[in-house]
Structures are given as structure tokens and as C-alpha cells.
Length: 210
Ligand SMILES: [Zn+2]
Image (tube, rainbow, N blue to C red; front, top):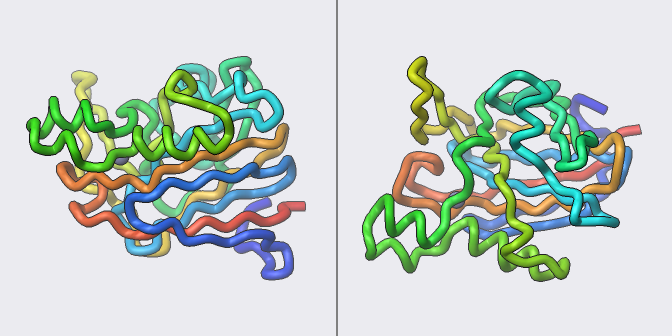
């Protein structure tokens, strides 16, 4: 279930343009690879049980279960019902956050000033993509930020700082237990360093792991 997918096993491949959303059901036994094509690009992610989206990713339960504040190899992404949705089986970057949340027009206005309120944001991407699956703003929960560097200092403070992902870095998510609706936002943020102030494309690949 790890390593480079065999070309014959690849079921799907897609490039998500800068600033755009994407979603797809990753079936049980399949692996989703998210590739940071050019480096320093945050990818915000939400996960729902495909046949019952009331069961969804829980950042709180995921962190509590693993006893660590970060997402990395071996992290089991756990649902609000305590089941494992996906497992991180490969990671060439080493910095993924699930504490800082996603950017929104409202938070941009508060953090970076009123003129930024009209810039596109991850929350809007999530709303657009969730609508395709009959879901809405009430279904947005605390998300994962792949390739986003949010160090927590000894005092417990954290800040979004320069991303450390290099061109071609990737993370692999294996759906061992259930079919999972994966919803991504290729983050459009240009006011902090999470995207190197220059949003770039990311690539997704899905293959049969078995
Ligand atoms: Zn964002």
C-alpha cells in the first residue's frame, strides 16, 4: 500500500489548478496521493464517510488518539465516531497541520484587513465542492492542512510560517476501513507564507493498493 504506484494500478489522475477545489470518493482499498507539484503549497482537506457523511473527520479525536499535535506517517485520520477513515502511509514532506483551520473571507478581513475580504478562500472552495454532494456550511469541520507549516512553540503559541515542502513532495492516504469522500481546497491564500505568496497547482493520483 506504500511506495510508487504501479502504472497499471493507477485509476485516476488530476491536476487541481491554483486556488481551486476538488473532491472524489476514495474506495476502501485505494490510496490517494496528494502531490505538491511546485512546493510550498498548502492543501486543505476534509473527509466524510461516503455512504453516511454525518460521520466525518475529527481533528480532536485524531490528535487525542495519536498523542501528537501533527499529522505524519502512521497518523490514522479518525472520524467523529472513532473509526479510522484513512491512514497516512507515506510522506516526503514531514510538516502537516490540523490545528490552524482553513482560510475564509471573514478571517482574511480580520487578520489582513478589510480589502482582503473579497479574495477567494478555502472556506468558499469547501462550500462550492460540498454542494456537489448535498452538503453545506454546517458540514464544514476542523480540517487537515497538508504541506502547511504551523510550528507550536514551548509556550503553546503557533503561527503559520514558510512551507517546507519541495517540488514533488507527496503524502499518501490509504482508505483501509471505508469508502471516503475526500474534499480538497488548493489554498488560494496570498497574505501569509503558507503558499509562498504564490498559489500553484497540486496533483492527485488514486490507485488500487492491493
Ligand atoms: Zn486556504
